[in-house]
Amino acid sequence: MYSVIATFQQQIIGSISPSYVAEYEWLRQNVGQANTSSYQRRYKTFWVMRGVSNNFYTSYFAALSAATSQPPTLNGLCQALSLSSTRRNGTQTVQFSFATKLLHLVQPRFPIYDSRVCRFYLFQQQLPTKLTPQRKMSRLIAFHNFLIAEYARVINSGQLAPAIAAFRQHFNPQMHSDEKIVDWLIWALVGLADSGALLNGRISYV
Image (cartoon, rainbow, N blue to C red; front, side, top):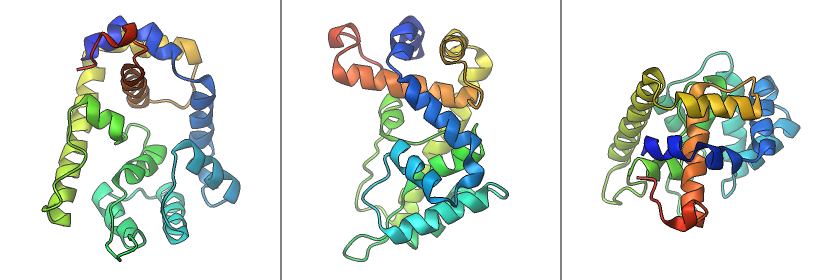
């Protein structure tokens, strides 16, 4: 699957909007302003945060502001956020993807969990409903631990070094870790495959 990124790196990089990269850079550079409404507005737009309560936003950005000086564990953050994230029937939910994005902003080598990353690595994002919340969390944490190890392996082996270098040359980012660039490459590849834009859909990303 990484060979596809290497082969089509120019098309993949070219499909990423420079404005997205610039906005990510701004969010990283200004994370110390996490308690301001202007920062929160741009953060929510960039990460497409919607469908959650105002109470959740309050807890989330308080956690982000605190994390700039003392990052919590992923498990601890998810547990804290679940207290303010409930469905209409009162069931608590785990905003796992948003939790990883929060921690990534203050620890840029921390991988991001989202639907495209799940699909690239063939992880079943919709876990069985019969699983207890604790079992679901265990599976999500286990997959994220896999991402940590896998990104480190790919970066240290140099497997995506040309694509990472091409990204840096194209965008000249100042606030990007190699892990975030790998995330961009995966995100863009899956998007191209979905749209059929990569060789008219005649190639798979797995």
